[in-house]
Length: 221
Image (cartoon, one colour):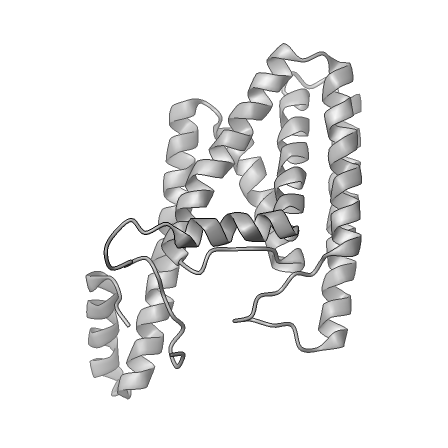
């Protein structure tokens, strides 16, 4: 297994201070790297959003999708680097597209998009959620049922917020409404088979001869 030099250095330093075993040092390096990647993911996503002028919309998309990820799961890359790169690109683009539609579409068409997104979202959640992965399977039927209920609840809350924004006179209501709607469509996509195929295709792209992006959980071959 290979980790970033910073992660390896920090893990080595902390392991030496705490007297940890080599396998515990690997786990510590993995955790440190995961934290670094998540922080970098958020910072670069928000930086790109700020440059594109869609900071607020991107924050809305990021929070919405992050919440659904926790309860509904979905397809993801085998590489933490690739997942971060997709997030950095997708979230600001969703917000940018929402801003564009809110300026160039009439209220009727925006509401049609929102209605379709809610319908697709509920259908995806009912049929698919929660979607686990081979590396992190949901074994407990009780936990699966609880995640299903939480996914439906999250979808219902989003639908209520979208309806409230539809009635609101706030100048940015349409933009945020569309940010939520597009986020729901993205969530529905990653819950579906085409979403899994998309991430598989992303994983098949080799940027380097040795793909340094790929990370394996400690203890796996």
